[in-house]
Amino acid sequence: MSYDKEDNKEERNNFEDNFILVDPPNYNPEKPKYSKKKKIPFFTIVIVAIISAAIGGVIGAYIAPVYLYGRYIDYPYMQQPAERVEIIAQSEELNVIPAVAQKAMPSVVGITTISVQRNSFFGARRSQGLGTGVIVDSSGFILTNSHVVDNGSAQEVQVLLNNGETLEAEVLWNDISLDLAVIKVDAVNLPVAELGESDNLIVGETAIAIGNPLGLSFERSVTAGIISGLNRSVPINEYESIDGLIQTDASINPGNSGGPLLNSKGQIIGINTAKIQSGEGLGFAIPINTAKPIVDEFIEKGEFRRVYLGVRPYDVEQVEASYGDIEGVDSGVFIWRVYEESSAEMAGMENGDVIVSMGGTEINTVRKLIAELYKYRPGDETTLGIVRDGEKMELRVRFTSRSD
Image (cartoon, rainbow, N blue to C red; front, side, top):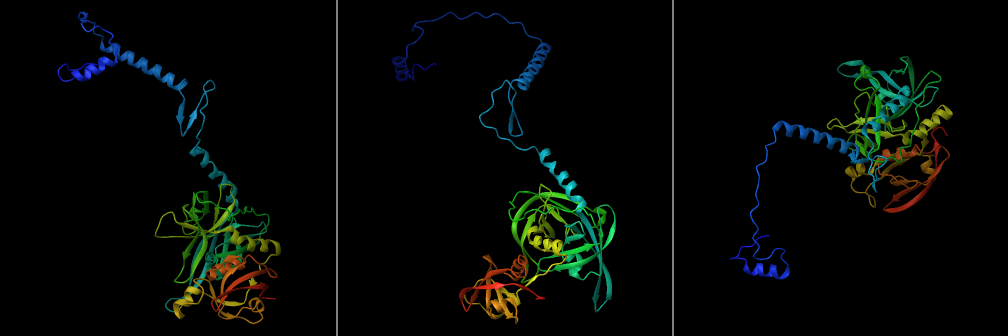
């Protein structure tokens, strides 16, 4: 360390007061003599550099720990790090998709329909439809969308099985509000899909769709993504929407309707139903738990009997838009009329009541009410939460079927 004698006297004094100098103040060593060095040839420098790089590579590969894909790769004679962060390799995750496709593909069917459309300009004309379905029972019950079978109006329905066989099908049941339908083919020992659980889904889970996008030339196409959202609502007109849907970014196109949305175990968690045309990666599926009670009854009894509440309902929003605010409610189902000798009348319901809950579940739309009713069977009982003249109260209802 050097100091300027003129400008840094005080600082130098402080320095000398605090440190013992190794050399005496008057020490003046002779200037060292240097001898000329021999110039090293350029070729030699290059050879040495190559050898050094090779040695460094060996040391790095066999001695130093390697940090790769978020984790340390260590060798037996090396000390393990205290904490390890492991990320599943992409190739390992992708191996799930072929396994799911192989498991579910035999139970996925193509559905073609012919309907007759009538209007005042062109008269009657035949139109063709295409969709997807999934076999839920080996005796030929198939679950699909209501709109795939033209909401029950299709005159001809054909099913293309995985083995290439085409069979005529009959529409046994459909519901426009749920956009679900059950059809049946005359066959036995068909491959059956495994139904999963949709109540405990988590955003970010793997989601795999199988269907027939844009025609049978692309039949049984497999697309994969994740669950992007839960409990989504998709409006279908000014007052109605389909609620409780699963949102996914797995590609869903026309023709995928009625096909399965699967989890990483190859279990059906939803039935694909809609896509937002104005955006990419916005597909929706009906949770499989909505369809399970219906499927179970068809398998058990060969038919499905829906419970009968016996009311003429409207969304509160729709009524308020025409007649003004309803006291004591922000949303719910307004009961325009209670039918005689119905479950609702026997429970004490009156015209003008507003249903706000059923069995502890909030009811805010007619579609939600219908979806909840599918959870019950004739003879079941539950509690209805209603608002009457601005006051909340509860009614105990016992369900019957329309034929009771």
